[in-house]
Length: 162
Image (cartoon, rainbow, N blue to C red; front, side, top):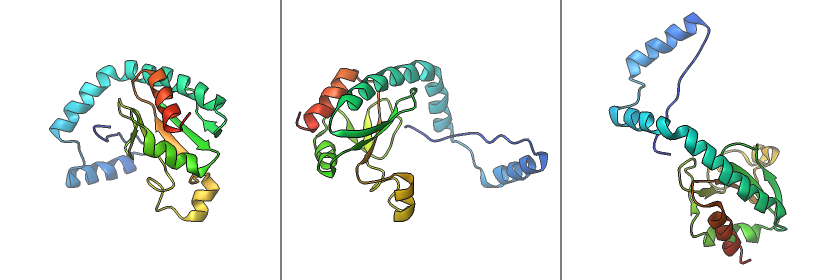
């Protein structure tokens, strides 16, 4: 979560030339420090993703067994978990009481972060569209970091008053 970067790949030569012209005229590049951060981060990406995945899989096991959790969405790899709590009161309780996990919009760091898309990242999306997408006030998104997974589970438990 230090920086945002990416690449553009296209087969169409004309489109590639149009983007290259845009790139040259707007300076759409990372600065030196962000480039250094990107190169530094890539060196440990594999080991970090493996640990994010391992930790997330442990947290998912807990969430799936928790009677206060309605549904867990997890693709099986990576550190991003989405889950629905059964009661809106539990959402506020969890977000207000986590101690190790940070309540924040930024996701994907080495630390665990939790967000509520309905009010944060997707607040500007039309209500009908949010409902179609399943973005409700009971949906939470947890970016699992590199902390001990049992510590994360214990943090969720204590935040919910279990």
